[in-house]
Length: 113
Image 1 (spheres, rainbow, N blue to C red):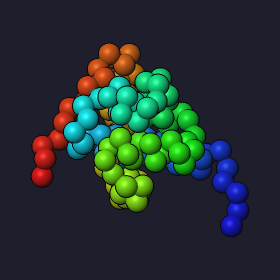
Image 2: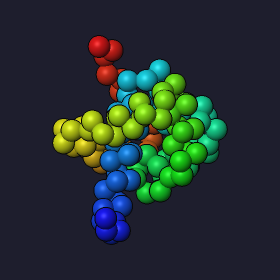
Image 3: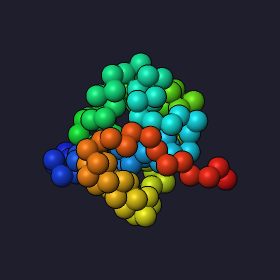
Image 4: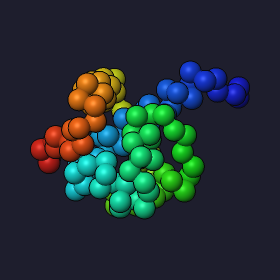
């Protein structure tokens, strides 16, 4: 197994950010700020995670899964099950957030299935 290069690592971080976005959209939490509070993290830390700018430790990932009320395996399932459409939707939302300079911290919730 070869070591991951920077591009591969960046792809992993953005996919994890997209997985958190997907989990957040269907969770009871209504913002990244609330996720940060429930996970016991600073909002700025969650913001860097949610834009794929930060590598995470296992303890941080587990704190995030606990904040969602999910197991580590369930949160990893969001990462593993991301589709190209999910990733495109996330990247579009990220562009919109940048366009509005982060003023739109509340998520548009998906209807519960």
